[in-house]
Image (cartoon, rainbow, N blue to C red; front, top):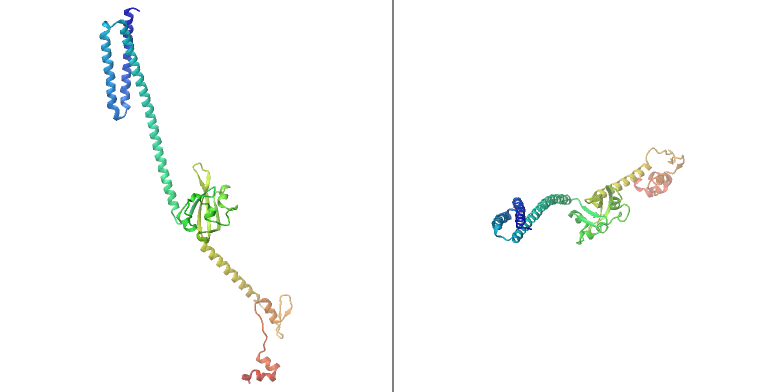
Length: 324
């Protein structure tokens, strides 16, 4: 290869390298717009050095063309081109990395924003749940394994607190009753598909004290709308139950009294002579026999003064001297 061809090849290589360097400088200027404020000044220094390198090396190379040996000239052009390509590739990698980082950063910002929203919603939900639990009505959440997940103070005031982790306490141990381990258990009924269970039952509370409650149970759902337990409320109706029982006893007593009164009510057909009474079947009964069969009255026999005077005249004056 003659000297002219080597010289032209060197110039072409330098021009190509110069183009890559110009593109690299342009890319660096674009990157400078998106980098953070903390490194923007340092990045500007890097861009300035790239411009200085391009200008200085190009001037040096073109000024030395007449005095450089042909092979050294082509080697210098190749080295310059390689350096320019290296800088160009580095700029592309940095630009792609920054673009990816910006996308990732925006994605993370969106995730953080969504996380904050979810956290805020959870905070409000928890506050709402605590407000619902913090009332005078005993409330309890029980999972499908009959373990108590959470209960309020009103619940523990009635049924007591074991002092252990509530999640390790079974519902039938905390509030034993007749419906436990039977098909009437509210939890089993909810698991079978019922949407609401309302029942009246007797439960054993703290220190073995038994009370009547109206229990209202509804499904406890997870985020996937799956039933993982029940939420129960307990309304104490012991006083009302005792009042109802006393009322029933009073009604029964009044009914018995009324039945006894009705035994001797109405018209009684009585003989004007012997004083026998005719019953519903037409038979005539002695007065004391008729009354004894229809009431709790019992008779003892005696004799009145008139009859004594009539039947026992000789004994009358001794029996009733005050009548003399």
